[in-house]
Length: 450
Ligand SMILES: Cc1cc2nc3c(=O)[nH]c(=O)nc-3n(C[C@H](O)[C@H](O)[C@H](O)COP(=O)(O)OP(=O)(O)OC[C@H]3O[C@@H](n4cnc5c(N)ncnc54)[C@H](O)[C@@H]3O)c2cc1C
Image (cartoon, rainbow, N blue to C red):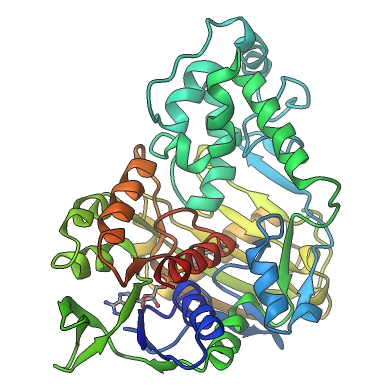
């Protein structure tokens, strides 16, 4: 049998690897439009160390990424953070991130001093006295939280956390898709705070007594995984090979690629972002097209910086919400966060660009890099603000936006695709944008085809 995987991001490469493990004698071909493998996974050499410019940490409590690293024989490469204490930058200064929130949704009014004003805290405290919650279907995170807990919770607490994961805005993002643990507790909870407590406790129970780090990384970079996956899968990876059309053919599928060639396949996994996936499904699964078109993407840029070694007192980093009016939306102090990246120089990365706000991304590379360096130097209070090295990476259409109604969209896509034997879709567009969720989705796709 021949499996063709379209897209050589972490999802496509994991699908190729899993297929090979299950069916060692099959032919596995991966077609990739770009000129390198990895998709959103990438790394650069920064002051002598590998340094991620895409994902730089993976959730350990969603186990798929850690499992994959271990399966690939790289368990000794896993690194736990030296600190996870981050702070939120607000117009009046910097405040430690309050502990015990559910993606920024507080479980009580305690511990919010400084992050919220006294009036904002009073609003949180009064939530339990509001009439019981009645939700009819999916809503935006912002719509629910603004009504129950006030604007400050959204703009000063939830935005930086949710924005950090999705580069999106709480007023657009689906509660059911981005905060499923909280959404699951709402129907039975007397208040939103009670639902947040229940979600927090359910999360703690499901983790049991496991006491490991929440996040881990890979010493040579998460961007080192694609090469290892390709080697382990033995897949025939063809770069610079954009798939332009997909049809059903005799007993299987036909795929047209740029340049006029047509490949045949017995099974196909589309591990491409929603836009190209919609175009490729127009013929074989037309009912999936419209819901796929309802998944837009946010673009962003990441600047990796090395400064002369100097003391910095910002924990693992800073979250910088739009209320500050700053250019950057976050700063990761990698030298403090990851033991293997400390020493010699100060390694920092920062990102710019949110869904619906990519004006800054119009600036040219030199201008944007200089502006980010200046913002970061000021935010961190650097005594020696001249970088010794910088590296800018643009992520056009970097992160899918799970807008209101996302779960229904995904269900419609899956049902249209599942009706076509031998075809599967997988990736960040569907059930989670994080690397572990992509790996899980790749495994699901292979299992449905198997
Ligand atoms: C800046 C940034 C930081 C992030 N940080 C984290 C983090 O710290 N932790 C975490 O868990 N996640 C993080 N993420 C999210 C995570 O990295 C991505 O969601 C995930 O890597 C997406 O993988 P994918 O394989 O589904 O898609 P992609 O990586 O987008 O791969 C899809 C591939 O398909 C190819 N393609 C598209 N069209 C065609 C076509 N027609 N024919 C052939 N090939 C095609 C593309 O070129 C691409 O290589 C981050 C994302 C970004 C952008």
